[in-house]
Image (cartoon, rainbow, N blue to C red):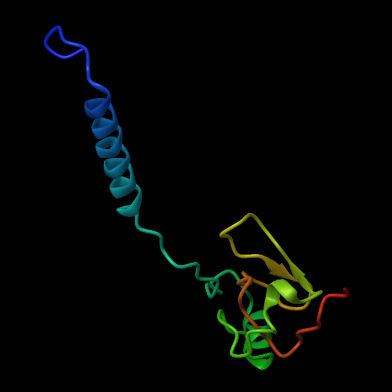
Length: 105
């Protein structure tokens, strides 16, 4: 009720549309940082060198070959870096290295 009067159906629908649009705008303003899995500060020099030797990158140059399709990849929570049985440190699900081995079907 507004000022003692019941809302008409048209006013109720309009209010719902305005509320939905406002909610959508609020959701769009949240900034989502792209996932980065290149922090090697916790690795030994040998572990960091192995990442370079195997040419690890956060984004695969060959889309069919990405870490989340590799049998050596150990996934973590969604939108998080995973791990690898060969390389130490954070591994991006869409990353790649020369040790990539396709998961069995």
